[in-house]
Length: 441
Image (tube, rainbow, N blue to C red; front, side):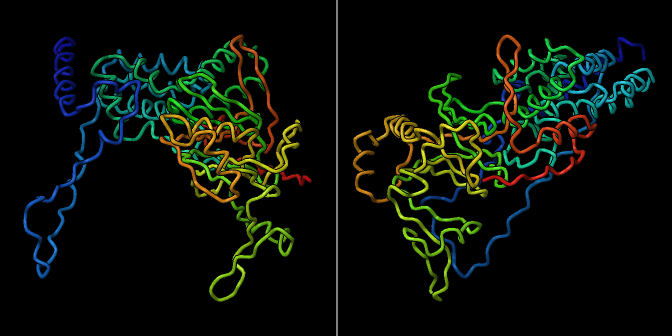
């Protein structure tokens, strides 16, 4: 078969395969919605008779297996486009050699279209995963508990088919990169930094990768807490709406990185003393022992009041790590430069102002007067936001300005060296040397 006929035949295969995919629109720039992937469940007849209680339950048929898709077929020019993209991926803080361009080049020159297609698909999958989800994986991220739904196997195959069918491979891959302006600023900083400054380059690269660990779109309105910077920020429509100082976990009780939905706040909260520090408060005035039905001590609690460690309020943001934003009765600590002082939760300066703004958003019924009245009552009360707000607690040890300069923050928990070791590893999983814990007062 001559080259022109081969191209036509490949085109027929691609077009036939593409008919099985229904999500062309928005595939490149936006992650698939859960609703788009959800399967509809059968609905009972609303006016039909109730089922016979004596009848055995009907057997539920197992879901049909996922169809086995044929291998993706690449043209030589498309494999060359992938090679070119790999060659410039260093601009994104990644290492081109990790994607074995030499192996892809050899497969392309072999004259075997199936070998070339298999090699190109393997590298496309590895590269797209790293662009969307980050190169560093698993435990090498250290204390990271953020779900990133940007790319799974099904969407990855859809993206590949889209890229080949439309012949827009670079655009498809670029659509996976973080959209946050800070990622772009770090990218520019990487470009203008002297190649001989290896330490600075690696610091920029690892923080670019940390942005890839987050969802590509954080939401129209969200709270982000950067632990090394000791700040909590409310962002809406890409603009900082509120920003204040924060106190994060001490070296021996580090704040984990996580994403969670905040649904409201508790005014005049009780403090449930963590078991790890219960001995410090046991029997002290102002603490209440909570006992079970058997009379045994379960935990210690601190009632609302001026001495309560949570201050006037805490955010309701359920997560397995039991981390939340809250007020404090020791507000003088916010004037300290080094604010790694808590048991893990995030004490937030002027958090009442933040809560008041969020409770009033979207026509909320909690006016400043109603909040003040509830606080004056000294009784605990939960006040919910009209719409939940995403909260991201992250660990960025560097930020970039628009001119390419870098602001460095203290690497509080000594994580950077371990993350860089994994970043420089081909698979992104190289274990680092455990950080030495330093006791603090």
